[in-house]
Image 1 (cartoon, rainbow, N blue to C red):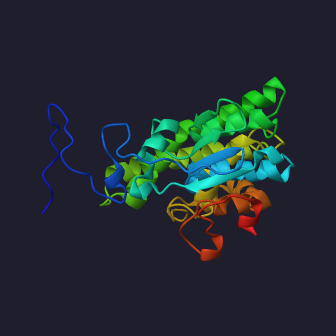
Image 2: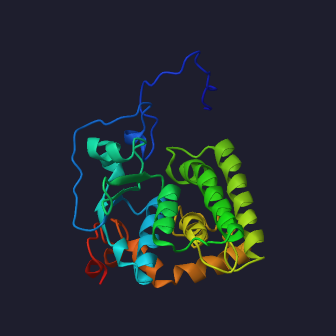
Length: 279
């Protein structure tokens, strides 16, 4: 028996969780739900995160900076368990009022600077350390073009395709078709660009590649959503070439392990407080 069609209420009201894997953390209001002071370590940078595609953007960049010899980029990475609502603790909300990971506190300056939104964190760190962001206007602008492209595209890939394909309590044809078409269009955008140049902004690896790879590189390598076959990801040959090249960078391999609590045990480093934690 088919379900009755959904009838829009005159005024929407929050009456029950929507269902699905993340129903317990979805709510229509902001602000903290409980008091919780965040831990603080000894390193200049304090990161509060989880190894989601947005989270690994920052740990990859930090590991890349350390690999270049920027030792002031040492960081403590504290685990934020979003499934348990850690992001709604008062200390976390003080750093990110939007209650999303990742969030960064730069304690190397006085007063400390809070940075939230993954794209903002990447830009902040690239400018702070003068790395992975070209200095010439054309290269810088092209890098930011793709960085902001990713920030605008992620809600369609993660919140749209990923949610309805992998996490929604039931498979619904309309939203899956709608967001699959958009995910494939975005992959086509990337494939055309990467057919023109080695990296997104040209011949040099930048924060744009880190941001986009963390979502789309992992998507085509089938490490998020297990959707590569469904999306015919093998057809995007330039994206595949780029994704594999970046996946083999040692700093990327290290960054993917930080704040990770699932998968093979050898790949899980729930918290990182020094390079030795990744040995």
